[in-house]
Image (tube, rainbow, N blue to C red; front, top):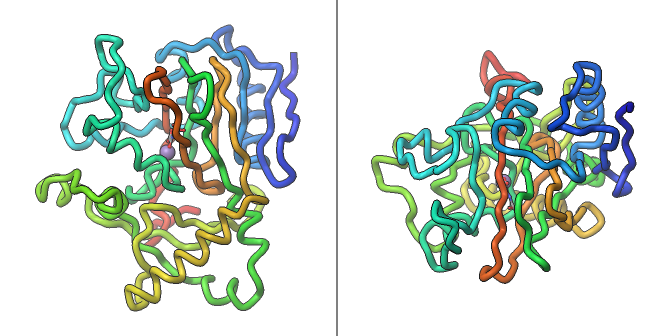
Length: 294
Ligand code: OGA
Ligand code: MN
């Protein structure tokens, strides 16, 4: 059965059919999915019953995988593989982790519009999130289209931001939750990084705004001026007409292009389990400097 796509939003997002990941995916199918990914930015796969091994193997066909932040910080808190991010409210014994627990509060950072790993020098290309257990209501993941957002800017704003570089830091974005999550020593191991405010897709040439919760200010602008510009662009990017809300069904897999969309998780009744496992395909290189890749 051949891969086919059905778009779910006027600007982006497509449901991919004709794929059963657990049963095996041909190289031709991977090529078709890669094309669909470049075009639609978000791909939704229904009814994919996955274990971590299968999810890891499928994800790795799109490129080398990232390791998780807790792994990088040597925390070893992750009960899964070093390349599987556990976004669940269930602990190793299958018990619900209370919403007030430090781990869950840290995870509420995902409720701010963001793009994965923009706090790393090589930010994420793709994220693949598997809904292993989903709540009966709420807990949606929302996506906003950064190409439509860019296209909707007026010519003056496009010219103003054309060559701007933003500074990104997870120490900054987590500080916005009102608590310090990193020791000074940890913070020193994840220093701020720089990325262009506009990134252009190397396959189809489409420009996209590149910001999100980790973006703290603009290099070379006064901090408050840069912050105000980021706030203005973020408000524009996340307008309702740019947003697709994914209502999770159990065994959905959603794959998104971190160069072209922002995403955020929505609240749910946290007495209900929500078990989500994410694998992340690394970008091809730094986005600035002599070795910049798009
Ligand atoms: C992620 C993320 C939000 C959610 O997986 O990177 O931000 O809805 N998820 O769980
Ligand atoms: Mn995320």
